[in-house]
Length: 308
Image (cartoon, rainbow, N blue to C red; front, side, top):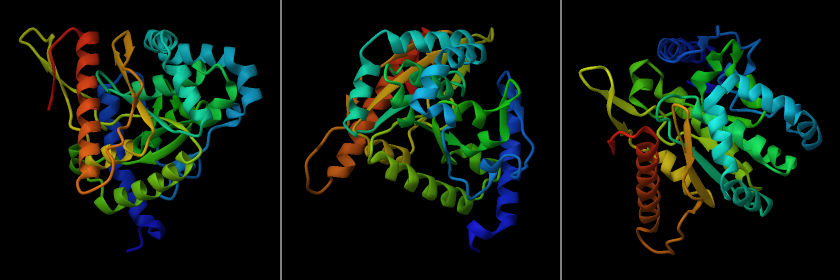
């Protein structure tokens, strides 16, 4: 079977994505399910691996629309968005990211997915609004789960919300949920290979990519009264860690309820050459990112947080 030309493969994929979107609707406020209609929503197609940023990604246009876009962002994201903007404005990280982009280097912004799935959108849009140089918006990007091609937030397709601020690369995360809901491994591999190939190519010129390294939200444990007793960070997938090592640097972005905080900008270590170099590099990045996610979330949620 050639996945790219098999329309039944696309239909079967969207049967699973529809179930996934329905699960999100039941769990997260403001989420609704879009019908499978690739003519209306072309990013639902199996062969759509990227969605280019809209016209507002032009520097001059974005600069003129910035106040309206900021107002729309805050209306959609509320107090969580305001907290993220405050965190982005509160230190040197945004300026450091801008300097790396100007030098043609790429940076990963790693959203913790601590208490929801909206942090990727919140930080992707927040970063675009925080750049002093509007031309850097053209370097802003995000990696989204293909299931979000079937979802809307407060009635607006999620793809439309993101494409006002960033180029979208569509993937299907490696997760137990994907397998449980019937996502075909062949279709997921096809989508991921094509999307990541496009992403890595674009990284050569310097882009900032907001993504969730765990792919799924953190696991919350409750006590007998229904309160939050502890939080567990899911493991980082091997392919995700491999991708992170292709960036020059990364920053972990935490969000819990109406509190936000950023970790430091950290350069991916250069561990020289020789046998085991790649494994050592990936181990160092995996350990540092996981540790930072635990520490940030624990400080924001004020509950014990551990790595799964």
